[in-house]
Length: 597
Image 1 (tube, rainbow, N blue to C red):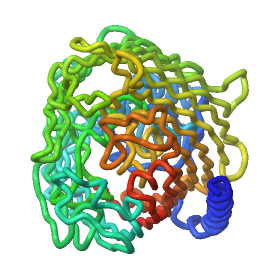
Image 2 (cartoon, rainbow, N blue to C red):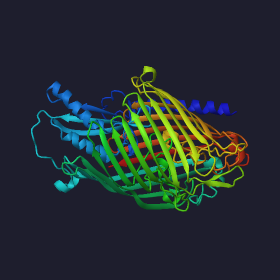
Image 3 (cartoon, rainbow, N blue to C red):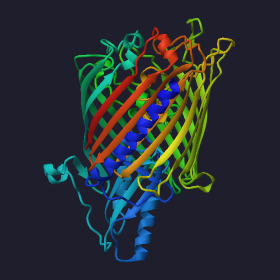
Image 4 (cartoon, one colour):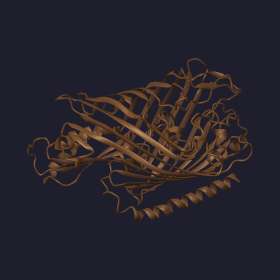
């Protein structure tokens, strides 16, 4: 029976994917921006708003000239200068105001009339590609620095720019979103069981259909400048986020409103001697992600539960406190972090995470890293098979090598990603581990850039027959289209005592339109599942659930982004038995509009 369900879900999903692809091939043509040159070594996916790329690693920086100086040799030299100026961003997490600072330096180059950038998903996904477009000038005549923005011109139409010249960018931030959502049989029809003890679930949804709306607005200020003639560039931002929900969502009902500071951080970059060498230090409430989210994703760094509103828009991403320092020396990077997640009031674990990463990225074929993390403080507890508290997360240590290979075996578009993590503990005999093996192929030269990938992930469980504690602690693992178990089942399953088979199909009818179909099959490794969500503490079967997600993403102009989602989750026998023998399929429809200024 379950195999029949899997075939039905997969076939219906494939049909939906190619039907939407055919629709997109003509409906998005008028809104798609001109296609920039493809990065030399990495194909690019759908265009992204810079805010969606915040904290995600830049896998490639591509440069194109929009026009000519009138001299081919001068054009070539100019392109090389721009490539060198922007090359320091490659391999680094995308930070909007740092990117703007680099762009300011490019605008100062002789023969550059103007310069802009755009951000795209990488192929394979999980990183971003930055495309810098420069308009050459016919002459390199010296001109006084042009000052733009409301503070310089007094013209309101210059908004959101307050001040912009060859040294400084200071601007108004105005992000926001609207969404309408509908779901049927959330938590497989047993929200009361899966939300027991969850203080954010004041009025959890019942069986049947529920529909609600969400919105948020995030105004703020941010910028970057250069200190005199020094190679030091301070930057920072402050934003305030007001969110709201109306109707019955998964955890609460009625009208909910909440406002608080979202981002409040400062940092500086110092150019070190040598090519592409730099020091970057920042601290405060900011967005952070470690590589692709296997250990730490920006999504669970904050929360949007219950009375906070905007549950599925998910606007809150900033950690409550951070300190991040990174030194880049050519192809090598050394990073140290200290993180305090933003947790829901009344459900705090008081977790702090610190550690470091040593990385190597040659910019073409290999991306390797080794990460060590420790938890100096936490109240989150670990349970033995009888439900007794063994210890807390405090004292956990994680050792994690990772390797990404591109153009595998010399085949363009063939890639592999491998991640591994081993955990032990200062206070108990703990031996837990997790790994992911991800193989894919993207045909970047074919129409719509079709892609296919398969990923297997394993997160160990605690075997009651041994004297060791073996349940993997997922820390802040996750991230949409990365290591989240599924858009629906992530509300009932953790990346612990879990193995997952995941098949992904992608298509890109244009630079502005992306389609993704994901199928995931989840099972447990041990029947002992202490530390899980709700009724899944002790299992009678290892078959947990499967899910099918269809994403339709459209980038409109420079400032608007639409995401549509259709999802279905099917309970396995483990879930069905845990809730009393009857569990319904879970369906959801999401429609979200985001804007960024």
